[in-house]
Image (cartoon, rainbow, N blue to C red):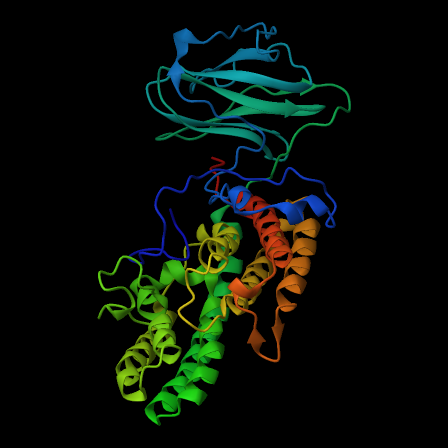
Amino acid sequence: MPSRRTGSDSRTDPGVGTGPVRSTGSDSVDTPAVHRRIWAAVAVLATVTAVTLGAFLAADTPAAGRAANSSGSATPDGLRHTSVEVSLGACGHGWTRPRPGTQIFDLRNTSTGPAEVDLVDPRTGAVHAEVEGLAPGTAREMRVTLGGGSYAFRCLPDDADAVTGPTVRIPGNARGGPHVVPVTEHDLIPPTLTYQKWIGERTIELARKTDVLKKAVDSGDLAAARKAWLPAHLVYERMGAAYGTFGDADAAVNGTDAGLPEGPHDPDFQGFHRVEYGLWHGESAASLRGPTDRLAHAVHALRDSWPQQRMDPADLGLRAHEVLENTIRFELTGRTDFGSGSNLATVRANLDGTRELLSVLRPLLTTRDPDLARTDAWLDRTERTVEGFGHDGRWTPLDRLATADRERLNGDVSEATELLSSVAAICDLRRTA
């Protein structure tokens, strides 16, 4: 699963599920129930790799075993089932009695190869539901809520052009479920280039502030080094969407001791957290010169190599969600505290990084994400909550937060993260031809 801890970094946890996670609470930003969320609820958050937009994707089952019928009658589950064919020559055939409301289409792939199937508005191209990887000779349910309007099935075989089936019209003004106009790679190239330039500027800032840290260690002034460590580290923590492009440099700059046989004393432990451990655990300046030199070397190499790097536009929306998802997994659990007690400062920096992503994606999201204003409001609220724990450059360590403050912080960050899942979903690239 792609994440800010991509590649060789052992901080990425295995076994976390994938799928869309959306808020089910009240639309009010002041919902008190959110404050009562604790980690049992937060644990359900997962990286969004695709969006079903209201469709429930059941497992593949043999087409002959489905209980669907082409007339679109109700079945024991209480919903209307309609059998729809998926093939190049008969895409969408079988839907002859359209009606509004929640219903299930039993998609049957009668072709010889796998296919993706979208239910779209043929005029705007907006996707109402989608099923990916429908194998030949199998069927899968597409659950969707339809309102008044025009619809058509679009069949996208793996090795052939898309085919759009007949248009079906549902009369009336009934309100349907969520839908989104697809985002293409061409749409994402301009914001990606803008973000790449911003990252380039941050790598320069990172090198400059890391040099201040190195100079303090080299001179033996550990008090100055402790003061210089956090500003440098926070620059890196604001660059959340680029970690995957950094590759092995991420571990060299910001790795932890996770998975290392000797823990923080392992010779392979390096980067900001290695220096942090030494600064706050009584190591001498002489013993810290080596780790700080290696950190500075990695940072300068990252700065010098960045102009040759190219970010994948497909990652941009996904990272907008993953930055705070990883904040929950690593910062709000205290797993990345090696003595400085600065996790909440890192949370604030991660929020800055998320804001930067939203700023470059906003032209695409304004007309596509109905929750954008609510997402902005929750980010504002979360920033205010976090900033309440920092004063004059000093931050309250996580383990010193009162229970009510910790619950409020967890709830705010988790709600903002859930809302950002729609950004990842909307920016998921989709075939249209």
